[in-house]
Amino acid sequence: PCMIIASADHGVADMGVSAYPKETTVGMTQNYLIPKGAGANSLANYCGAQMEVIDMGIDADMSWVPGLRIHKLGMGTKNFVEEPAMTREQAIEGIETGIRLVKEKIDEGFNVFLVGEMGISNTTASALMTAKFAGLTA
Image 1 (cartoon, rainbow, N blue to C red):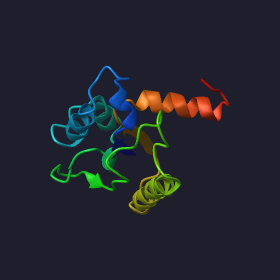
Image 2: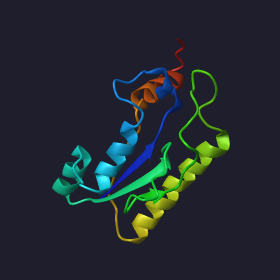
Image 3: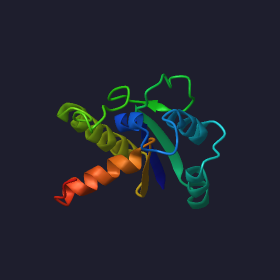
Image 4: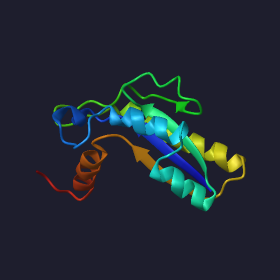
């Protein structure tokens, strides 16, 4: 198995919608790769999965973190309460990046994938997407 975690910051975090500060995204992403002490690491170890972590838009320079793949779509997203979180082009690039990474891992022999994400205010973003898909309004 291969576990892929995409990390990025959400602009809506600036509104204080999370119990945690935005900088937690940086710390958690480091934790996946340096001490390897996150819950996701325990799950990966339990099922024998290789972990891949990719910076898709953390609002900080993460180039110093060993093993972190860097493919920033931006320095976080914009606040979706005020404007679109990202451009259509950024969204397409993000999807295509994920497809390329999975194809790379398939070529390496992986055929089972565990996917996750890290980014403070991710639940708020997920709730918005779920509401949109369900045709709900505020």
